[in-house]
Amino acid sequence: MPSDASWRPALDRSVMLRYDRVRDADLLLMPERAVRLSGTGGRILRLCDGSRTVADIVTELGRSYPDAPLADEVPAFLDRIRAEGWLR
Amino acid sequence: MIPAPWALLAEVTHACPLHCPYCSNPLELVRKSAELTAADWARVLAEAAELGVVQAHVSGGEPLLRPDLADIVRSAHRAGIYTQLVTSGVGLTPDRLGELLDVGLNSVQLSLQDARRPGSNLIAGRASYGDKERAAAVIRDAGLPFGLNVVLHRHNLDNLPDIIEVGARWGADRIELANTQFYGWALLNRAALLPTRDQLDRAKATVAEWRAAHGTKPELVWVMPDYYEGVPKPCMGGWGARSITVGPDGTALPCPAAYAVPDLAAPNVRDRSLAWIWEESPAFNAYRGTDWMTGPCRECPRREIDFGGCRCQAHALTGDAARTDPACALSPDHDLVRAATTAVDEDGRTAGADSFVYRRPGGPRISSNGSSRTP
Picture 1 (cartoon, rainbow over the protein chains, first blue to last red):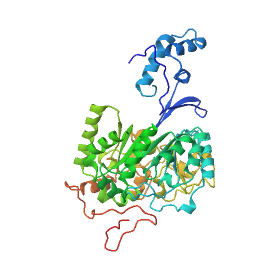
Picture 2: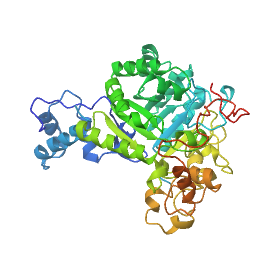
Picture 3: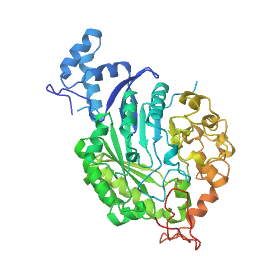
Picture 4: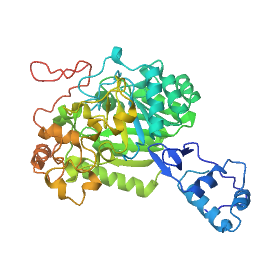
């Protein structure tokens, strides 16, 4: 399912996002599983608070990464995470 | 540098309302009077988080039998640890779960012994099916991630389609189909629990059919029956590689079955920091990595995949924890496993396998005529 304009992504209730100081990485924690995120992955998911649309998230990230192809890559990343069941 | 541990299995009590004959607790159960306090657990959980632990499985026995369970869960949550309650469901009322949710509980794993009441109660050694059914509704109504764990053996493998159906109907997100691992209590009951190959083949087909039809709703997790696979399981992801088990009295081990490995000099969290236990203790270093390996493991291309299998099983069957796991077809001791599986006839009967030795405090008790007592 491609991301739609009205979608305001939020982490699924089963998922905890936290920074792990020992491994210097953001982790997604869920029952029986821990997923280590890339630096940008963690940064994107921290903006998924259920209030921002995907376009809002792209705009907000654009302030930090003005030259990155965010309009393509961020929706694709969010769709992948949603397909795993970690975003709703 | 030893990689940080990911998970802590916190066995907060060995007390349990159930008496399952494959219990993963040691044969010698820890008495209530020797249990760590909630303050001890707070320190252990804080040290665990400091060390890199991000997941805690709060287990037992039955953790709900501890009146101070919420204090323990709160300590895990405050340390930033994702916390799962592992329960029989007996005593899991809406109020009790609400209390645990308030202090940060993240998920619940409920055990089920069989699809239907008589079979489930027979294995549990007491009427408990109704409690489980009610507990499932409590978990589902709270909207918590809900895993169902079913230990599989000769007496329930043929009911697998019903077991999966019950799990789906009860609202489980995940059903762990855990073929019995034969150490401790389960090894005592091996003749009564070991399935036939036909049963396992049918069960695998059932799992494949369910996944094809339903995908991951619920997700089925198949824990392999190592006696029949010819390859050993990568137990705990390697000795001292990912996980720490702390028992009710503070004994710390790389896995819950390791109580039975002698000469390990198991460290205790009352005496030592968890960091020392993980990094320095002889017990956690005894079978870490591959240097300790003997026999076919030493040259095996799979040695970094399965780590030589299970040390506790190697010890239980051969008397030497450093030997290749006899479940491996390459093990010189593989005939020990083959002898057990070939002793199960086509009707699933094994000589002397008419009754269970139920798990109970005081260790296994066999009556004088050789049959086990039920509780």
